[in-house]
Amino acid sequence: MTELEALLRILVAVALGAALGLERELTAKPAGLRTYMLVAEGAALFMIGSILLTEQFGPAGGGIAPDPTRIPAGIVTGVGFLGAGVIFQSRDRILGITTAASIWVAAVIGMLAGAGYYITAVGGTVVALITLAALRFLERQIGAKSPPSQDIDDREDT
Image (tube, rainbow, N blue to C red):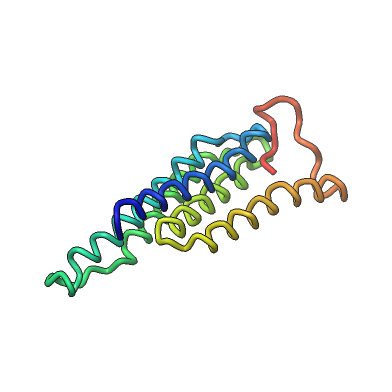
């Protein structure tokens, strides 16, 4: 992989993370634009690093074959920890689960972009945006969830 291709992968990840983050920002959710951009970028950088290390130190490089799946597995664990930080229990409600799940999705999208799977990353972003925006609208239309209160501390994460 050339450095220019690595840069393209990073930029795609950041742009797709921004799309998710903008949706969350516009609906005043706990994590917003910068968080999603950084999560996607970080995941892409880890993937690129994993690929480069495999290229450099793999069997073709004369070294012991590294396991390229170890770094992505670490990303999933690390982002799970980050997502747990946005989940709160308030009275009889649990808040932030959708935000935590969408941060996790942003990391996977960043991993895909970092691995060069642009179409899959874009498709995943589109599906996530539909899930977040369109289904929120549908839930409100059918009365599945009550609209969030005006007090940000009591706002339900939908």
